[in-house]
Length: 345
Image 1 (tube, rainbow, N blue to C red):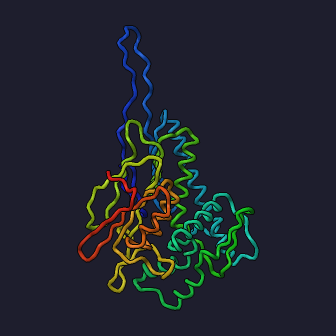
Image 2 (image 1 turned 90 degrees about the vertical axis):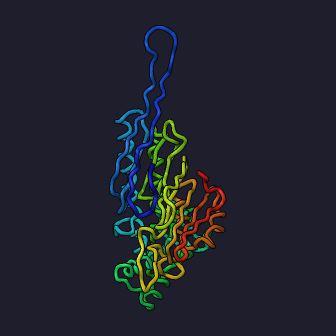
Image 3 (image 1 turned 120 degrees about the vertical axis):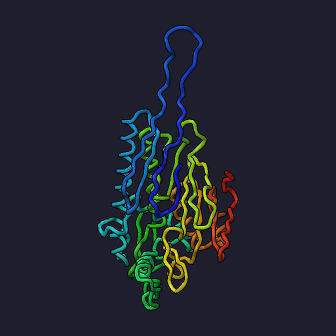
C-alpha cells in the first residue's frame, strides 16, 4: 500500500503476491512450476523529491534493470523540464522571453506545453504553466511570513498569461510573447515524467508497476494475485483516515495544504498559487484526483485546488475518466464531497 500526497516523499510497501503453480494427480516426475513474479522496488531522490519505482518482474535481474531504466528516464526529463536548473531546456525557453522568433522544442517539452495549453483552456486558467513569476514571489512570502508587496504583485502578474505561449503544432515551435515570463512545470511536469517512466518500464517487459513521484502516483496492471494497487489517500488534519482506493492502469494525486502551508495575517495559505490573484490558495482544503494518466491527474489536481469544492466539480466533469474527492474545513467541521466516478471502495 502506498499513501499519496503531493510534496511528501512516500515509499511503497509490499503487496502480497500469489504464486501460480500447477497441480497434477498423474504419477510421475513433479510437474513444472511457473516462477512467481519477483517484486523489485527502489527509492531515489529526483526532481527535488523522493521517487519510488516498484515492479513485478520475471527475475530480480530483469526487475533491477527495468527500475534503473525508469530512474534514468526521470533523470533525463529533469534535465529538460526543471525550472530550477538554468541549463534545462525549459529554463532556456523562459530566459528567451519575449522570444524574437519561434523556438523549436524537443518532443518532451512540446508534449508538456501542448497538454498544459489544453488544460488551461478546460480549467478557464485555473491551471497556468506561466505562473512562474508568481510562484517565485509566493515562495518569498512563505519564507518571510508577509504577503507580497502590491507593486511586486502587479509586476509579477503582468508576466503571467497562458495565452502568451504561442504554439505552432505543425512546426512544433513555441513563442513566449511577454517580457519576464517564466514557465513553472510544477503542476504537470512530475506527472508527465511518471507517465514516461511507466512507458519505459513497459518497454522492458514490465506489465505491473507503480511509479510514486512523491505523491504523484501512476500504476499499470494489478500486481500478481491482486485486484489492483491499494493506495491510501492521505487525509488532511481532522479528516477520517484510512480511505483506500484500488487502481490499475490509472493515476492519482492529492493537492492541498495539509503538508505545505503558511499562516500569514491570521489566515492559512497553501503553497499552490492562484494564477488570478498571485496568492496562495486559502485553506485548509485538499483535493484528490484520479485520472487515466498522471499528466492529467497532476494538472487537474492543481486546478481543482484553485477552484475549490464549489467550482471544482464542474471543471472535473470536462475531463473523461477523471474523478475527484474534495475535503475542506469550515471552523472545526471537516466536510467532503466526491464527483461522479469516484470509487466507493
